[in-house]
Image 1 (cartoon, one colour):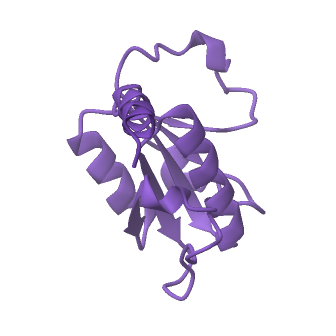
Image 2: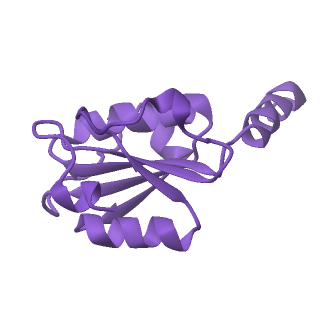
Image 3: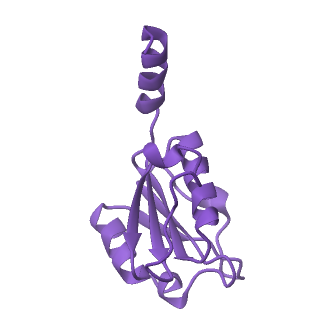
Length: 132
């Protein structure tokens, strides 16, 4: 590895955002999680949390185009366990939601450690996630 490449990798790692994470709830299609993993890698999010519909689904080797080598994916069987873990890390837990009670994303204080829960592809966020 050239010194320039090593320096570039170090610069990217220094820009990571350890106080921002994403949680995909009820993942139905692993390529959707892979797309989120790639996006997180691009913006410096180092951890992604995934609540799987069943244990047979996981990010496959090539589906995240190598991003899975840089992103830690934490797997859960249910939303409650994921939220409990995120709160243990002192994160404010936000849930994406298109309802009358939703808050504009620009009104959130992102200077706090933040976890954003993205609902299931077909049905959105579960009642469990919304009842935080």
